[in-house]
View (cartoon, rainbow, N blue to C red):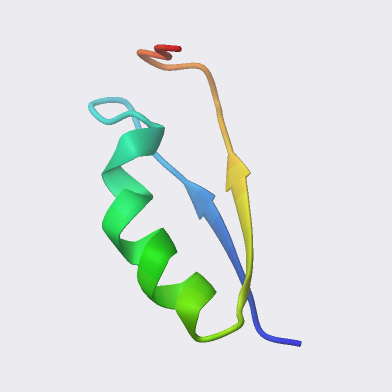
Length: 42
């Protein structure tokens, strides 16, 4: 299994990874977001 676990830093939010997520999911990789809470928006 190929897997990506994302972790963003201070100046970014989880939406930074959206384009990458689409590409990797299309290649059947397992994707996991790790939301640290900085600048979190629903």
